[in-house]
Image 1 (cartoon, rainbow, N blue to C red):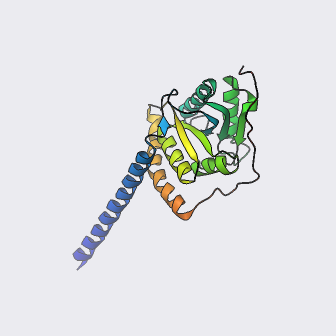
Image 2: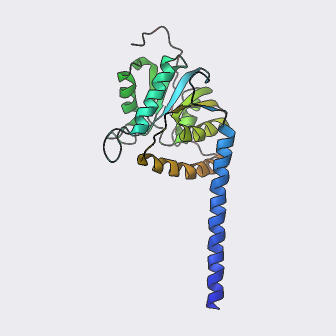
Length: 223
């Protein structure tokens, strides 16, 4: 009797694992399929937009030194700006405490690379990718914009943006090829499952606030 009960438990667990694995696989396949023609590595192929949404990350790695994801995203944003593919950069990231400010750190890096301070806008309430994308459309008034992050992250951001009603494309920052990169990649597989849970529930950012106008720029020196 105990053996039969144990067999049922094992069968139930195996079915649960198979169901979870299938859900993760299907979510990832759908996100990749729906965005394969909307994320770009070649700056010559991507269209122009008034605003580039630069997704925030920490400037420094946990083990010390500069975070390569941070550096590569800033580099991609500067390339887009210098090529005239975007006119303004909206930096969206986590600033839940005064001791941690992703948008401000990215603004400093952008200015140091020659982007005029007046062309950079900060969204300090972009705690999640969903928040950053929806706020870019609803708070900062951009129905069409370019997301800037690594390719694996851009796919999810573009998928969220499209299903939120915005005309979004992604420009892929150089990937990070090191042992440091495996954790974000693993998290991404499961984050794509949460995308569908958020869409099903109609999840919105916890804070929207007053609308912010990003005007088209006049002639300003890029130096």
